[in-house]
Amino acid sequence: MLVKNYKKSKTLKHKLLNDAKFKKFLEDQKKEIEIHKWIESEKCGHDLQDQACCEWIEKFAAKYRKYWEDTYGKIFEEQNGMCCSSCKRK
Image (cartoon, rainbow, N blue to C red; front, side, top):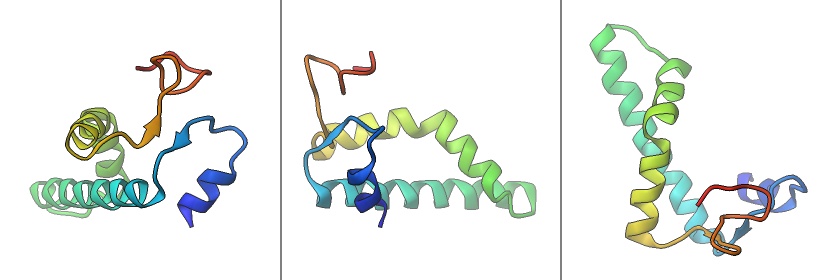
């Protein structure tokens, strides 16, 4: 569902290289978030829910994507050394 909506989106200008690879990335990332959520909730003694998810995204998402792409290959096609024509991220 997410991949279908992503591909139809007019605002997202990145080009997916491979739907299966993108799905695997999302599944792997979700597992990492769930592990982080569980560990942090255990430390606090109660379910942190979205707080732990947001914390993982802020602290680890960029590094995890780099690690994942270094291991499995790029998810998005780069244009002129940037991930898309509308941003400056490399």
